Structure formats: C-alpha cells, structure tokens
Amino acid sequence: MSASTDTASIGGFVVDQAELARFEATKRRLLWRKRLLPLAAIIGLLVAWWGAVVLFEIKPFIAPSPVAVVKVLIARFDILFANLVPTAIEAFLGFLLGNFAAIALATVFVHKRTAEEAFFPIAVMINTVPVVAKAPILVLLLGNGMEPKIAIAALICFFPTLVNMVRGLQDVNPQALELMRVLSASPREVFFKLRVQNSLPYLFSALKIAASTSVIGAIVGEWIGSTKGIGALIIQATYAFDTPLLYATIIVGSTFSACFFGLIGLVERRVVKWKAPRA
Image (cartoon, rainbow, N blue to C red; front, side):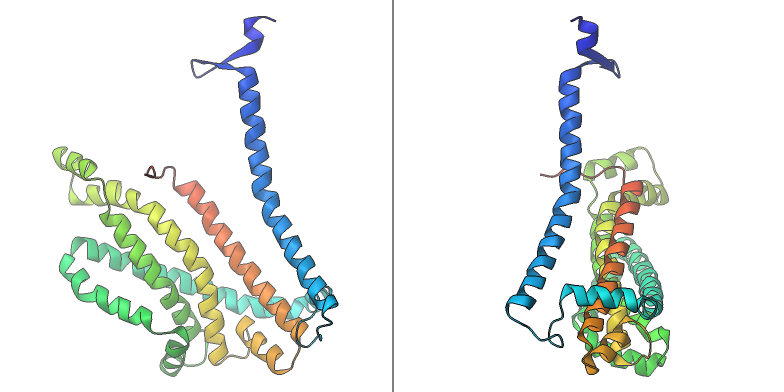
C-alpha cells in the first residue's frame, strides 16, 4: 500500500489515517457513552421505583407507580402546562433580574474596593436568611401577584452570581494585566478585553446554578400565596391526596429546570471559546 493512502495532510502536518480513524471512533464512543449513561440511569431508577411499589404493595396515595404518573401526565397535560407557564415566566424574569443586579454590583465592587468591603457582608447576611422566611415579607411588600415570586427567584439567583462574578473579574493573570498597562490600555479596555473575558467561565458556572434555583424560588413563592403555577398545583395536589398529580407536577417542574440548565450550557459553549488550564 502506498504512503499516500496510509497518511493524510491536515494543516501542513502528516497524520496517520489509521490513527485518525481510531481517534474518531473513540470520540464517537465517548459521545454516545455521555448520552446513553444518563438515559440508562433514568430507566434504572424508574424500574427500581416501579419494583418497590409492586414488591412492597405501597398504597397509591403514598407513592404511585410510574405508570400512574405517566397516565396523569398524558390525561392532564393541559392543566400541567397551564400552571407551568406562570412559573416559567416568574423564574425567567427572576433569573434576568437577579443576575443583572449581581453582575452590576460585581462591576462596582471591582472598581470600588470600599464598596465591596461595605456591602459584601450585607449580601452575605441577606443570603443566609431562608427563602421561606423571605417569601412572606416580599408578599406583604409587593402583593400577591407575580412580583413577589419574581423577586424571590431573583434573590435566590443573586448571591452565587455575585460571588462568581467578583472572583472572575478579580482573578486576572497579573502578567496579562501588566501587559495591558505596558500597552497603555485604558481602564475600559482592561475591563472589557481582559476582566470580562476572564470572568465568563465563572459567570456561566453561576448562571447554570441560577437556572435551576430560579425555578425553585418561583415555586416557593407560589407556596406562600398563589392560585396558579407549579407551586400552587403542588399544594392543591397535596391537600387533595392526589399523589399521581403531585408527582406529575414535580416532574414537569424539574423537567423545565433541566431544560433551562441545558439552554444555559448551550449558550456557554457558543460564547466561551476558551477556559483557563487546570492545575
């Protein structure tokens, strides 16, 4: 066999075709493994759930079988979707509001160290207050509409993003910072071309956490006082001992949260083109 069929030129480098084929096969295998392992784990959990209900003869009002939950998901999908919409709106608006406030405050902290020393402890203290304690106060202040739910979702998103964004903006390579100064870069150029770029991996790590916690915040807000939403439907199903509906509602809420998380991950792969090397 000639050398031309055994090797290929990629970007000026000679690459063995057999080695390239093995690399591609390994890459595809790892990709399928990444996709199939979570699916296998979910199927395993469903089988274990169904087996436990059947084996121990658990009453339906305590723990329904997966089949009963699926039937409710299909039969009452319109009710579940109608209650998902307000929760999704509250979570999304709270996500935007909380993260915008955190990014803005982190920017102030980086430029004004005195402000960080004065207000960061206050942010920590607010974060230590449980969500269930904040919710009634916000309902009293903002009423019983969507506003307190959005505020709760924003508060629960705020602190993780603030901490990560401050660290990302401050944890800049000193050599890169010195190079910007040697090149007479303005403070604006240093901030946007160096600090912001460096903070993106930190920021998206926080945003993925916030994507899940914003849904939790919206649901907790609906527990305090609401007639619609995933949180309200959970309360109604609990008091009515409609356990299949309760489980179906939780599945719908967690599925939306997982999709929101995945959306942020997709945006991260498009925006963050590099990551700092790990030690």
